[in-house]
Image 1 (cartoon, helix red, strand yellow):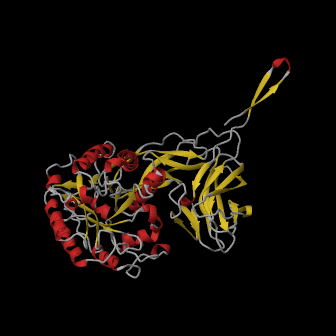
Image 2 (cartoon, rainbow, N blue to C red):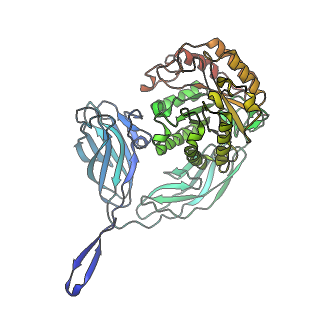
Image 3 (spheres, rainbow, N blue to C red):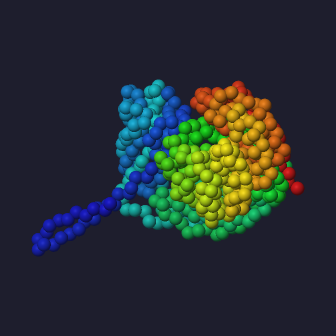
Length: 560
């Protein structure tokens, strides 16, 4: 806020001398920084982004932030941290490789859920700076949530960079376009570039992924400086992706935009397909599992076609911090897209069971998700996980209010919704599936979800799945080989009966769950997510070994 200093002068003359405006601090989340010997975790509440960095307990573990400054001079750094021990965990702070604060103290905060701040002043250069916080003791550093930077004061930079030149395409595939352009210049320094589709780049090249085969896309690019000034838009370039390649290697590259045809799920060629994937556990509890090696195993070892991202609404989920959980979902979507698989966005309402309780929240969440990812063709929207203790009429009403919210932004992507009775077409409530079959949701490119746990849901449930899937499009968005609690003994014989039916009728499915929780339904042995090995069978529980064997067999994706 600009302040004025008033001086009383003779003849009642008042002179106002404006003070220099001070820029608001800019926040940099630790989980987005460069981490050396540490992990992004979310198991202690109170952090502000999608997680925090837990330093390894060793000298030299570090977090390096990339910070933009509109001008050179002194800047205030404020680290938000937690230290649940009683021992100080000091760190050396460097700026662009030079010492700025030695042994900066980070004392105990009383608990890992109690967050405090530590401030220091350093000198920044105009443009991009590297700020590194390195642990100096064998205890490592504290848990770091974020860094706030109050940039140097001075005359604000209002000069925009020059316009990028010669925007061009350098490569195309069926699902991606690579762009390049000539660098812009700026009086302080260019900090990055913004494409017309909203994606950003730090250099002068960028690959846009998740596109539809044989489709034209138009782009421009603008330069941005550290003060946030944007240049004019470059020349526009229109580029067409290549036709889909039969026999391609990645599920989304082959199948493209999914469509409902009759009662089946079809690919871009209009051919019925079956997708097989894994569901995460609740990302409010097990986001720490989602490491690069975890993704590598899912895509390259398990050969999964998609991931279902379970975002609980209650139970310490979305309602506690909508911004945090929406950003987490963005991250999962981008990573799945980069790896060429589909992503099912699971609005995991459970308690209360009436999805209308969260209708306003759902509209807010899916509006942002659709706005950001509407140009991707690997998105599946699941608007209700397991409606329960509620009538089908209320679930149908909810679905018919939610679907237009998405369709007004993303008119093409697949939408799925649960049914009453914990997504059993009412069977778990003692109702006949005709309650749904005779009063269907008024929507296109829409599927009904069905859930089962083989040790609890025997032949009667199997018969329901067989019956309903012959009359409406069905997607099994969650199943387990054990009891409906997610634990207990596995019934692999009953599970195989379900899988045989789903293979015969090309019903897509997701298994619960791709985490290391203590129950038998989690595929990884407890403690696996603390390490970095997820491939192979050595880290798997019996259910994991069984499911992996059945998910990694070759897909049948017809293209002609």
